Amino acid sequence: MNGVNFAQMCGRVREELAQEHRYAHVVRVARLADRLAQAHGEDRRAARVAGMLHDLARLYSAEKLLEESAARGIPIDAFARLHPVVLHAPLGAELAREQYGIDDERILSAIRSHTLGAPGMSRLDKIVFLADGLEPGRDFAERSRLERLALHDLDAAMRATLRSTIAYLAARGLAVAPATTSAIEYFALTEKEKKTA
Ligand SMILES: [Fe+2]
Ligand SMILES: [Fe+2]
Image 1: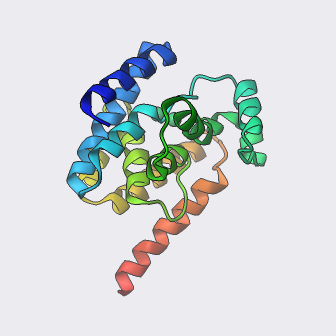
Image 2: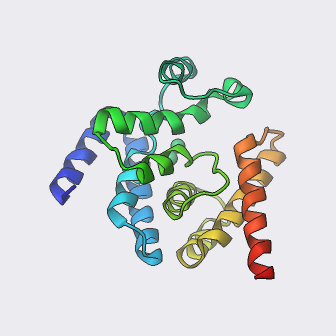
């Protein structure tokens, strides 16, 4: 995909999201994903495309998320049934494939795991997850420290960001998704493996 096509994609996303606030967010995510990809030797174009397309279903109603996901055979577990908003990630990957012709599994995987995380995330998955959580429009105390951490150590940034997510949810009495718990366990484990290596 060349620069012109990426610009066309941006124009289309802007029209289809139909909300300037959400469009500004995906632009910031694409930019930070690009910087993280550059810092870690990852494919910058793939990072930008995933950033631009990650929230295609973010503004869907709960009902529409459940319907459209079911229609595509996307698994809907008990957590997603209670919190359909999390389906915007796997559904967004399907929309990127159907509407934007994205068939690069690396990009689709990064879109799929951008909200809850997952065990065994690829480097691009981590980049898009972190870019989404740490883009400059996010307003929390640790944001800029975590952004700097992400630029030099993706796994350390994943651990810190997942921990801060869990603390945020716990403080509000909100449930943690099973995928997020598995991701925390996975990144804690990779840290132990590093120490014993
Ligand atoms: Fe999202
Ligand atoms: Fe997002």
